[in-house]
Image 1 (cartoon, rainbow, N blue to C red):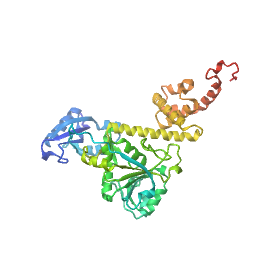
Image 2: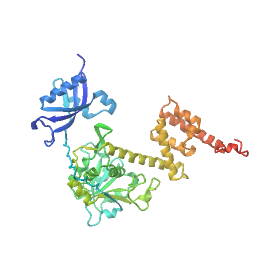
Image 3: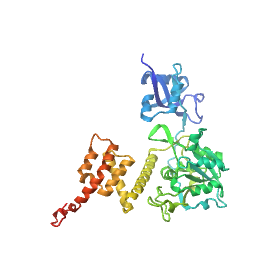
Image 4: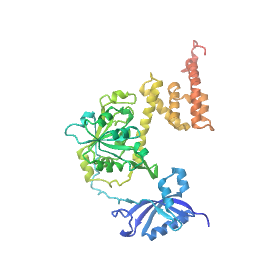
Length: 453
């Protein structure tokens, strides 16, 4: 008999009777991750079917089958899978994770037109606008990663606050997001207003919900399921103002309305590296070359229109469960927005070494470097930055004009990081060669008065 090993898979289950349901009773089907001790994939299926049959459950679909070792190699270690493996034994070879109910598809009558997209209203405000007499209470979600002194500030201030992570670990809480009630003249409010906005310390909310209600709602969005990995969610940092603004542009309208349900407004501090929507017009709109002093104190506020909120409440897709997931289309939108921010950040860094280069030229060089990086498998930030420097100084056709550079880029046995180092070493020589050959460019070699090189 071959030795047993751990197998994992993703199951779609259906209860054969109401008593067999191990999830919310309003759904007939559920998804669950399973770990099975078995000698082979065939044996794993047999063990799983026998356990399900004994529990009154029917297997609708089984996919993502692999050994635990294969899963760890592909996706990294998973505490959830490790705990499930520990829960198995020779007598009980099957262990199930949390069974998440699948909501039934709701068919929309063909005669009913689709609900209109909920318009998002954007407007520039100041801190004082948040605290006018008729305004709802103001809350901040402070990012412990970008604002490491948050716990020290909260400890010394008497404010309503709560950690969005359910943990007692001091180290984790220090880098966690914190929900804080802000009063107009509180020390915390003035401290936040004075923080540099390019620190991206967090976001501001206006809501009449209680601390407990807001925390419960926002906790649903701290983890995100993406099409990139359907085995485990990732941390979703919606409290980073850059991500919050991307979220408003990437999510389907009904999902954004669901996120904004208890919120009247969401505000972010403007910064040079934000993707401000192209549909809005700001006075002296910030761009990647804007200084932090120019945007300090300027807030961008977004809100759904009342009619959009009413439409969402009347005609709403399946409501969010405790797991927040995005579609491939939404995932692609997030990727496009993140790529734009990375592009602007690199262009901003290049400004220091190329102060006389125009902003469009900087962006053009970065885009050309990205294409070269894709062609020669140089995709890291440092590698693309080196390629951008070459494009700025020598043109985006520099590999064709400089054989030594092409030799470096096309070398089959040199790794990407080493190619970058070699390009950095070669660039001064390439710069010198380019200057020497400049008189010969554009048919200058046909000029009888050309200088000798």
